[in-house]
Structure formats: structure tokens, C-alpha cells
Image (cartoon, rainbow, N blue to C red; front, top):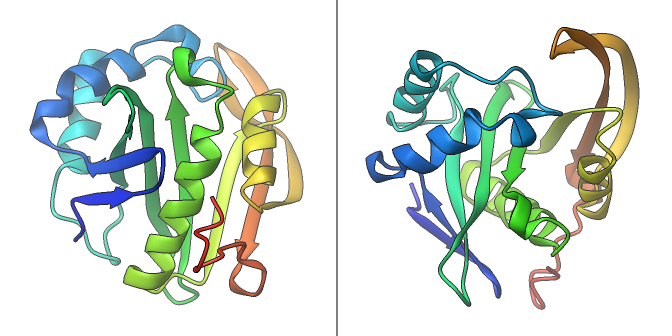
Amino acid sequence: MNKQILSPRLTLTRLARQDWELIHSIYSNPALMKHIGEVKSDEEIRRTFDKEIAPWSIKSTHWLTWIINENSSCNNVGLISICTRNLEKLTAEVGFIILEAYKGKGYATEAIKIIIEFAVDTLGFKKFIAVCSEEHLGSRRVLEKAGMFLDEIVPNCTQIDGKLVNDCLYSLESGYFFIDRDARGI
């Protein structure tokens, strides 16, 4: 499995033990979790982290996660993950979290594009899905810029801070891939 995936502005590095502090700081941060879910306890974060650093194959049920780094500064930008959702139909879910200081720079869109390219070329996925809360307009814009289509809005689907929110279900199928392999249309 590729340890690093490169683009003009980003390096994605497979999650490793040394990334514990970053992962802990993300999943325990109320501002970053505001549109994703409940802030996790230290114990929950540790369990999730241990799963995500375990060996991964397309048959795995846990997320395959990379840390997103900005090439110009080598700073951590956030994380991006994929998870097999339907092996028979070669469908993967894409998820991402971008640190506040790096939002609005196009890094999430760029990371999604290169992860999808990697997942198609290396893992053979044919379809990608993503879920975000209806009120998280930034994530919705990112998914649409990455070429994904809004399929459905499911009312009162996910609980965040004791409140049920609507989920937006996005998808991208192989016939609609945006990837420009010559220019790496990122």
C-alpha cells in the first residue's frame, strides 16, 4: 500500500503511530467536530486510531487514512480517508477533516481528487460516496468541486450535539470521473 501520495501542493502520508497527537487533537476538538459528530472520548479516539493504523485491504471494514501535509510548509492540513462500503459494487466512502487554518485553500478538493485517483488506479474502486450534514455548506461545496453529485438529503439522520441533523448523500461513479491524467487536473 502506498505510504505517500503526491500532488502539486500536498503530500498524503498513510496514518502511523507518530500521528496520535494530531488525531487526538482533531477528534477532541469541538470546532472541528461541529458538523461531523460528537466529540470523542480519549478511549474512543484510541480505539479508532488503533483500527486505522492496522493493516488494510479492500475487504477491511475500517477506514484507510492519510495525513494531509502542505508541501510548501510541511504543516499538517488535516486528514482524508476511504472505507469500503460495498465490495461487490466496488464502492468506497470518502471522508475528510481540514484544520481551521487551512480551510478555504482548496486543499480538501485536491485531496479528494488524488485519493479517488489512487483508489481507482490502485484499489479498483468504481464508485465513491460521501456524507455530510446539510448545514455544513463548506463540505458540500468541496464535494461538488471534487465532482460529486448530491443524490439525496435524508432528514433527521445524524445526531450532533444532541440534535438530529439532515445528511446529504453524495456520489461519483466511474463514468463521471474528473481525473485529467495528463494534467493531473487538480
